[in-house]
Image (cartoon, one colour):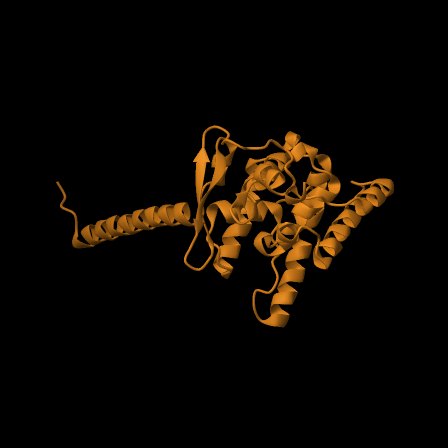
Length: 265
């Protein structure tokens, strides 16, 4: 029997060593991507629940995200939210929601221009889909790597879920005030109503809160709309008219009727 030559033994060792390195790289990549890019597909079978823990030392909101096999208590189906409220939130937060595939190239381009001018992350361009993955799966910083992950996961979420499901999740995890999470809690907190009873103007008020709910809800604390809130609500209602989600007649009625908060009734 012919013995292997030194060259053959060296070649075999090199092949074995290369295989082990490739195997190590494979498992490292698998571990890395599993940690860095969590599976958004779990939302096809699970329901996210925001659990409010209170305020931290710096006054920030302390929350936990739990994923449930069944709908959490207080979960509101999309069919149980008034059409006016849905329209107000979509035109305010993500005008092209039903057209894009998870991200809005036009808004991203404008955001990049604004960031370059100010030499910092001055403007966000997150769609509703991106906000869902950011709030459920990602850290809150504004680093470039986080934005890359947010973009990738948003595209994956759009593949896994339909628009209605994504919007339903968004409405049930969004913050609407200090310790107020979900459209059901928000409608009761501000207006003592269920979401299906909200008017277009009340929906516009809730939409106005979303960029900064704790800061913008001073109208509720004062019991009357601030000039800023009045202007923003009018702007949202005008967008609804342009999007043909509100008639001119209904706009005139909504803009003149008083907004009555829970603490005024």
